[in-house]
Image (tube, rainbow, N blue to C red; front, side, top):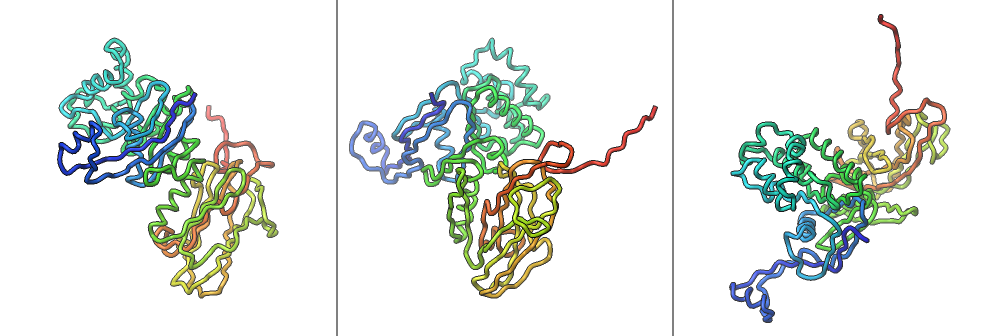
Length: 406
């Protein structure tokens, strides 16, 4: 059985010229609204127990509205949904808190709405206060709290008992680094115990680290449902599309999708990862000397051309990136030219699968003037046949000295 099932879910917000028109609509009379805004449009998906699903999309895509419907604070206009088990949600920061009450008093109120009785809460309260870790402020009015302190209390009470479904909507982005780390550790522990996670965030790192699937919402519809790295690549490309860039996707086999965006004045002609003898590689040894060869085809005279690359791990997390702007090797190419770039570096990487994204642009980054950005431009695997075992995505061999001092 699914932890969450959504079928044909739609939500519209209507405004009427007169209030009695709204009331007449409640009784089924055919009164047309003066204005109707469709926020969700016929959404259908299901989520299996214990999975971690990210929900992304631009502002106004319908993310928060969907979560409010799932948590029961908003009713859908049509369609249905079914939730299996108890839901804990951290939605709008401080939602439901009373600024004149203390943190402890707000916890009591929130816990009662979550169905936690006074006797159980008495046993949970020390752990809630300890997790929130705001010291004497816990017994001060919440209007004196910073946004980070509010988030600490909200997260602590929402996770006081392990829920079957945990929903987090951007709230963790306001916390300090230490509490974010503690919160993510708590979320992972819940996941290992079978909790289903729904995470709404614009933070790619959080999405690809915690989630095994992502839904991309656009104009109230599911535009893409797939692996985190592929969906986030498309999401970033769609943001770039607002600048007039073309966006296309190509299936690469194995379930992966390559996303390309740009204005097209220059294009990526080839990308190869070579050994010192010039042979193309798919498998690389730890510490091996490599050459990344990128050829750019120029279709129009350009004021400048910057070529960059980003090495990513299997989750799509950036490992290393640079470009010719930062390396002070910017050129001014002419239409019809093909320019080859060769970046040499050692493979100081841990064992695993990696991908390389490549960009052609102007300026110090690709956002403002993107001729072409290509994710998954090259994929390779790192193995360790000759060095001592180590853990991680970076090979940083130490110089070790051991001596007796007494």
